[in-house]
Image (cartoon, rainbow, N blue to C red; front, side, top):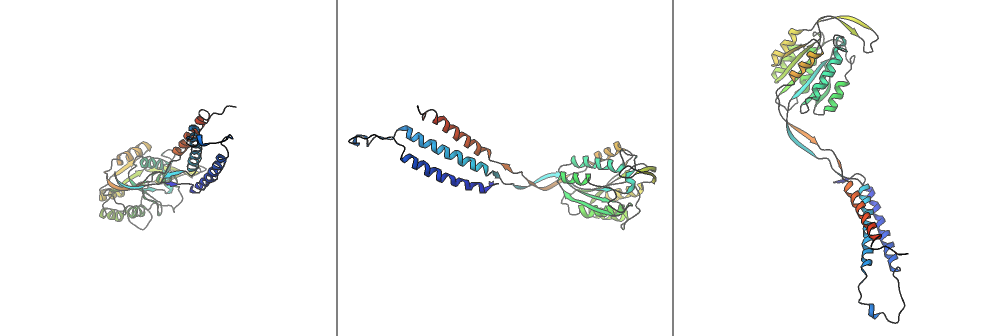
Length: 325
């Protein structure tokens, strides 16, 4: 238990002058009558209303104190615990080369890939997932994480033109291997999505595949789009041109076969969604995941105490302590 505004407790000092004022007021508030001798009244107990009046003052102090504590906002602190869940380590490696703007997908290959990848991420809440993009070079955007919101934002934030153009499949695969190697799951998988042929980078694709096999990492390759002439549009839709594209299916099949994965071909959006649905049935393993509980506000019980004490005070004030004019 902790207080969000602990300085508010300094207001409790106001109870001291209130109590002093009440005591001083009571010393001069009793009615008196002058008589020759008071011996007959010495042993008489205090009237019940006097005790009720003191009790009412205590109720007022309780209401004020409870309200001050409520203003201090008591909270339960965040707790951390480690639990075991069923999941796997997955890294998405997405091609962002210029040919991914081809419009044989709606609105284009790149946007269709992002939308499908986002849906895939949301459907696997227990996996550690990371993100790598590649074109003429590769870039690791997100380490392995279970934070779905951060990962989805990273996928949605991918933009074309951030890297030199080209298709460095080997470099992209190498970056994904480096990113997933630190994962603790027994099952490690890379999902590589591309629409071209390796024509850039420093690492041959089959060399990267051999490294993945050595580390026990499966690679699922996806060839996106149709071969032949396609229309390419700029990111703002102001101009378009035609481009000859060809997917190196043999290389992608070899990568998948070497690592124990599988090659998929997606010629339209529907087929691309089916590919990710099939990959969604990957084997899973148990993971140790750190979970954090959200902070809870606990000021309402103190508000109810303040309201209850003040309500009881008003009830006694206008019943037992009611004054007749």
